[in-house]
Image 1 (cartoon, rainbow, N blue to C red):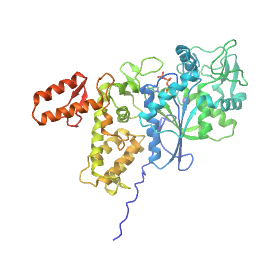
Image 2: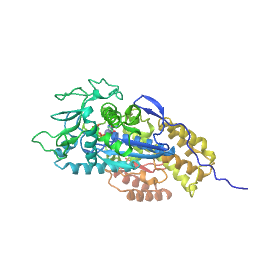
Image 3: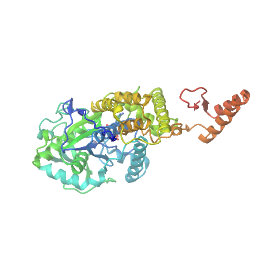
Image 4: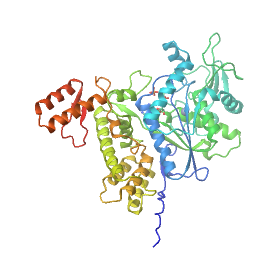
Length: 493
Ligand SMILES: Nc1ncnc2c1ncn2[C@@H]1O[C@H](COP(=O)(O)OP(=O)(O)OP(=O)(O)O)[C@@H](O)[C@H]1O
Ligand SMILES: [Zn+2]
């Protein structure tokens, strides 16, 4: 009798993604056969990222993991905005980086380095995969100038304050935002001499007599590139127009991305590129906001939640990732500590199930085996349906709960799904989820030692000693949970 290895599971559900341009679900058809090229607007590194910002990258990561799962060769680019983002997304205000550098009395380069590092730490803690390239805006200034030179004659005009893009020179400006061309959204004070309210600076000249920390020479004088120009240039340079998918938070649908599209149109037309509708990317995808009761979480408002604060309070960062996965990326997600606590409990349950499975299966089977095909198909269908992570998670848990199946096969199915969800459950140690909150005056080893002593006291039926030990632990800020069904013997008091 010959033994046949099971055929590998090939996800075949048609991938449909919501395109903000058409406001419709569309079948994903790669520009380059077998590939997916994705650009995500990166953080402006003038401050720590808040967990709302990180939702944007958890979403982009899920998209990337799904494209990989579907067998596509992924090239993902995320940029770092270290110059050019003004305090208002339209054309007013000052550079967020310059402003913070002044407030902190540090050089902009220092600020950029520090907060980029902080962002990368959060990326790592949330199991966001490394993109193929991190493009740093200040490293692309010559390309930005070249791009602007190419479109300047037909699409731009110069004012004292800079080189402006005339939005009336491209067809259907603002179709992504569905905004009025003249008014645009959120466009406050007009710059003197602007032809249309929505025109925007692609090069900002340094005012005479002033010196900026970051400035470059250009045909339009010394100055700095506009934020919108940066993303057009970095995406086009690395991925080539047209590329497949451009992502960002839903706020970018209103100003930043319509302006990128206008520049891309101008660039593609001047270069004779027949890009469909010349938008640069075929599909534009936007994640909705993480909100608090008081409204959208915002860096510029000064008060916000950092991932580190969650950790300091004893929540593993992956509980936040799971919290994001429980909602659809296009829905608003309201942050609450109760919600995060519930996500942590769910993560613990998953981890316990995987831990028990790992004990029974010495190794992961090469393939999940036919028993798991219907589950993988449902998982595939959910993720292919515009990243329906909420449904995908329930399928994942159904598989975790399956009894009387080969453990090695089951582990292979779990691994295949987790590669998409990115919870990293096969690598995560159960004890890693017990994060000692910052305020607690005892370390993990100390807690474990007291718990062991207490267990021994109980085994000897010395309940007085057992109670005294519990009080001792509680005094240090930790509550012992007797009979905890999850087997998590302690939590924050
Ligand atoms: N509350 C939020 N929920 C989800 N995504 C968000 C939220 N706030 C910003 N984003 C997204 O985070 C990403 C990084 O944004 P960026 O660093 O430019 O933030 P910012 O505009 O400086 O900060 P803020 O909007 O908080 O003042 C963008 O894709 C943005 O759309
Ligand atoms: Zn951008």
